[in-house]
Image 1 (cartoon, rainbow, N blue to C red):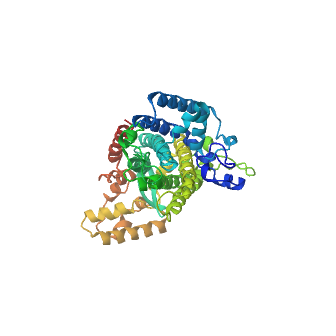
Image 2: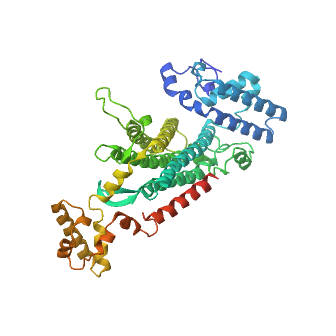
Image 3: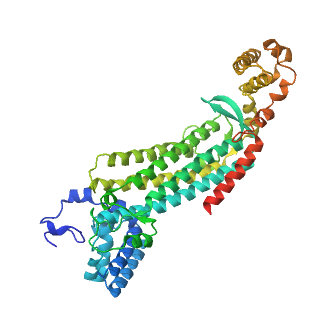
Length: 468
């Protein structure tokens, strides 16, 4: 190797001088891409076997390289972190360097016919595939937590809001199933994204393909991919799969942030619908009475960071010419960080929901307050032939009368209601009860207890099927 190029560099022959120390620190990616070391070794073993299949390696050489790579994998697993003292540029260089240390010149044959461009893309796809499966498992656990709440409180009423104003009563079970539905969509999106992740770029070389007669379909199958990438120029630089994965992470983060906001509001003294566990709250260093929803506030804050990672990768890719550019070295930091933060948020959310208690008496009282049964009065009038727009206006007038009297609608005397509209009769009180309000929402996807029972059973079945 010419000049002073550092040991283990894959590209030193062209250069007379080593890189400047500042540039080396700027250029090296080992601190970030180290977490792909096992994926890099797996890809290298599969590549060695293909080199044997096309006659580049003998059977004995392939066996020795495979054994050497397995030894490198075991060694890597014992290290507490990236081996920065090695001075090596990236994880690919480190793996090859370690192999050469064990096998001498034989280890230098491994990189025949491949490029770091197709290797790093393969490594990231292998890592992202594992990551998606892990995030889906964590999503399943949070969905389970909401289903448990739905089971415990399937028929218990609580208020629902639009514009953060009391709207109509629902059951707690219905509320919990709303979040389960959001998370189920996130899980489905991840599964869909996995299909684009699951293509193997190895064998595409730097951009034009490999000069060796590699069976790329067999290679893809050996690494568990569904198929090989279809265009070498595209495959060497494509990061759409990471962008799509981050888009799903961002959507999931939005759902978690909405949940956090709901729970922060519901836990406040003004709402007091839920009580958070001491295990997920903190106190104040000054005010002894405080019990702060820090776990939820941190979820809400970290979700912005996850969405930011998606925007970061979009900007990274937006003006790159074909094919590979060093800009793409920055993709991993965004992907890895977003994955880590989403994982933490999902697991903390499980802890929050598993330890939260609902104040059922308060939930019932608030579900009955705020004239949430005004729509029932309008529907009552519609059933008696009053056009809905007129019925809506009559119900609004009834609310004004009740507000002036300081009473709920159902406490107004019949004479007061009939003075507003003559179609109102004594049976109106039967439809203004909380139970009647809930039970009337019997259309599919409604909050009627019977529909909630159906929905939670269906959600359990769907989740079990996905996990199977």
